[in-house]
Length: 87
Image (tube, rainbow, N blue to C red):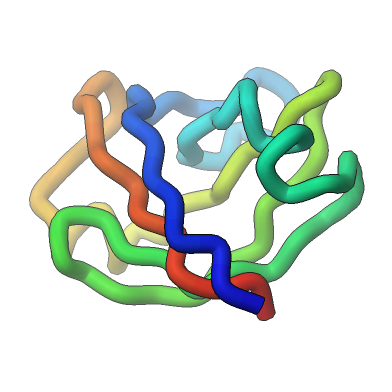
């Protein structure tokens, strides 16, 4: 299912899991659920697949070290996340 939307977020480290991620406060309204959602996405032209995980009424998107290295970003940087498809 095509999503075709984007959002800007700061890369953070989740307090509970310690994972590096971006949080998306509007996610539940756009994705239509508060449950986990697999997506095809891109950050700064780097395409990848990941799962949005629910946290406190919104979702977080974990970012693997390989993605951060590819886009040359780290915790504290702001990125534009483009969502292409819900898988």
